[in-house]
Length: 308
Image (cartoon, rainbow, N blue to C red; front, side, top):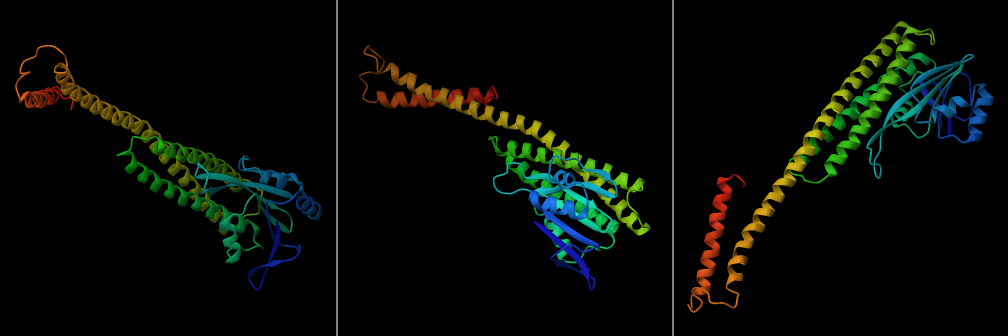
């Protein structure tokens, strides 16, 4: 899908075809659409193909007068995906009189920015740096959600002996690995923009880029902290679950031993030999009393040994 946008009366409006100084949104394009854009705007079609690869790292590439920026964006997955958060690639292609946002799937916050006229299409650097800043804040927002999820799982682990919670923590840890790796590559890319002469940067735009770098670094630190917390929790609660299982096994073993006592006593009176009190009409009561008394004595002994 390819959509063209321009500015009219200080508002972003969608148009049917390309005009100079326009924004082009490309989402999961076909080969024909990629060929059409690359031929029309004279850039390497690999720029779009690279942006559709979620395994691409954040980087900057320059070919003649066209600049490609790969930005890593966080994405939340619902439904059947075991890993709740991953990162996807977004390509920003900057030419003389156009800017292209290229992604494999729709990016909600970009659509929101366009619909609410948050971008200044004619000010390319500012638009891109605003995108960087918002992207870093979205990383931080997802990290807050991860923290809440960790707290919920922690409560469940106090009373759980199953592997479900540990599996959830493992998948969260994978998400944090995706976040940390992507945030670091985003940081390198943004610092390269800040130091180099790749884009013309006005002083107020430089402030936005510096703010984006600061937010990005904060997200890296938070991601590292949560990753360390998760790793420690997984080790600790793996031991807790193992200990809980040992406690259950100990209780079941004690119950099994106690249940064997009346079985042994009554089995003696099932033998076809002469036995004490065998002619006593209250022999059955005596057997019950002996069984209960022996069980109580065994419980007291277990208590003294601190086995219960």
